[in-house]
Each structure stands twice: as C-alpha cells, then as structure tokens.
Length: 187
Image 1 (tube, one colour):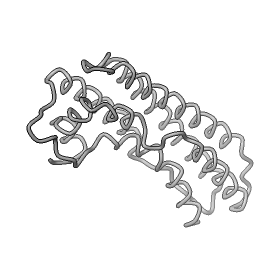
Image 2 (cartoon, helix red, strand yellow; image 1 turned 120 degrees about the horizontal axis):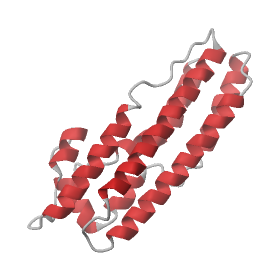
Image 3 (cartoon, one colour; image 1 turned 45 degrees about the vertical axis):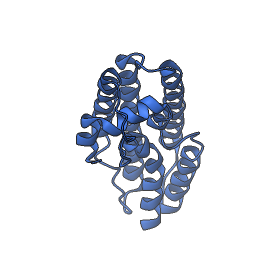
C-alpha cells in the first residue's frame, strides 16, 4: 500500500506545486522596487491561490482493506483539486490585467495553463470514477493510470510561473507582503 500511497501523493504533487509556486525566497532586485499597483495585483492573485489551496489540505485516504473506498476518496480529492483550480482561475480573472508591460500576455499564458491543468484533472477524475477496483492490484493500476494522465501536464509548476516570467510581476511577487504571509517566506 505504501507504493500506491506514494503514487497518489506524486499524482497530486504536480498540481500542488501550482498552488505553492507563488512563494519566492529570491530577494528583490537591489535598488529597484515593485510598482505599488503591481504589488496590489499580485496580492490579489496570492490571496486567491491561498483560498484555492485551502481545499487541498486533506489528501485522499488510502485503505488497503477497501480499494473502492480508496478510489472514492481519490475521486473526491480530484474533485476538490478541480474546484481549487477553478477558484484560482476565477481569482486570476477577478484580479484583471496586471498593470505592467506585457501583463495581459502573462495572464493569458497562466490562464491557458490553468485550463489545461483543469482539463487533465477532469480526465483523471473521470478515469478514476470508472476504474474497476476489486483488489489492491486493480487499484494500483488505476492509480498508475491516473499518475500517467497527471504526468502529461504541460507545466507542473503552474500558472504562477507564467506570471513570474514577467520581470515586473516577478519583482512584485518577491516583495508582496501578502505572498510572504500566505506562503511563509521571507526575503
């Protein structure tokens, strides 16, 4: 069962990275500080990521004696994961266009990454719901199949990486008091 539990954790790790990628231990560029409007925008995004991440605090429970219950727990977790990504996408849209050069293209790329990830989660959930799990071997196979689907994610670091590719937003993420508080980072 340890192997299966490890696979479940690995399967969700890629998506969890998208929830925690907002954190940054990199110090802000010396002599340059983020624009206050960019900081305010990043604060909104980090707050929405934190709200979505809260849904993922309870990983699926694995019970070697009950493969069906384990599958159902994984399906429920994937459902929460999809909902959390939906919340993040909504938070990104609600934040609007970042007030930095090329801000819209950064948001567009992040939104596309979220959509693709959400679609992969939905496909994985559907496959898991339909999996026939009568014993540990069939459950391990269902988990391996789900893990393979999750492995197809284009960018497991998530949409925040796309936003941080913009130098002005990266600086704002590094300086944001909200992101530091939410993710427990310090400069």
